[in-house]
Image (cartoon, rainbow, N blue to C red; front, side):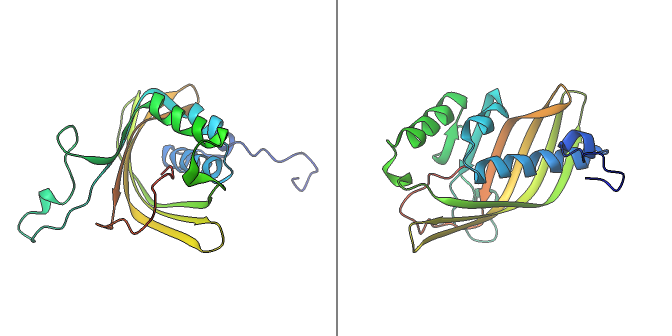
Length: 182
């Protein structure tokens, strides 16, 4: 409540005034949905033609930085998915058919260093850093840190996630599975 007794408006678009604030609010809302396991609502934030991609990280000598990440459409990747595949993964988790998520993981998604790289009337290219904490059962802890490059499509007063490229800062997965959404 405000000091005058009127209800406080809490929708991101009502509060945010700049494009950067609106983008940050969108990313925070998306993280909140994932952390609260509201996967169907998260799917609603994805454009129908989303490309969700996470390349493998490789170790190369300093003279070959271009080879650090596997190449899109040419090499293997941890994720290379569209909306149908993401939807299927969520259905498996919700239906109890996903052994690696039984019981469900507890997650905390954090983003920082949000920077708008470019913007048109239709799309916004965004880069950010992320930290993702995952806990399952009593003692399974996973920590993912890295960079993301997102493309948001303007949709009404908000956005839809059209493309997500996830770049981990670790070259070896030290975990039993990789079922988390970034």
